[in-house]
Length: 196
Image (cartoon, rainbow, N blue to C red; front, side, top):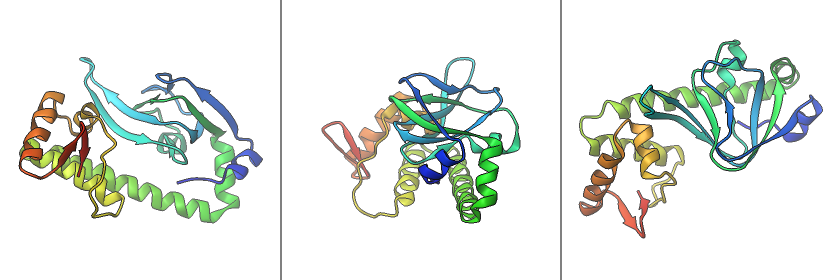
């Protein structure tokens, strides 16, 4: 979901820069702003006491993130970190609600965007309960490709570690499983890049 940049600025939006590795917000903190990416990427994740991460989403130019806690005025349930130099437009909750009131088509777009994200979250649960690592990884890759609505061989933009973090598998398991899947033709690995 993308709100037109000019609308955000007209309603008081302000650009903010974050360095790679800098947190935009932390789990448990209270939300104050709507964030829409102008440049860079953001990773939303949760981590356990042992440092094991579970990625909840990766967001890029034109996308927004962290809206449900902001709208509900509840604490964030994940961390958001810049995975590259980042520029976001930030706007306060009350000004975002004014945009929704003045532009009902934006509200409708948000509704469908949230429905898509809920569907994706349910898909991730399905992925994590797969029976074998091959099943789990293939379902993850299939869902990614399905979201892009293509049947063509596609370069997968995620690292082995990110696939592990999305699927709750160990990175060693992901590497071993992808090699096996490459050997049986389920995926293609060309110059260390993954295609599905």
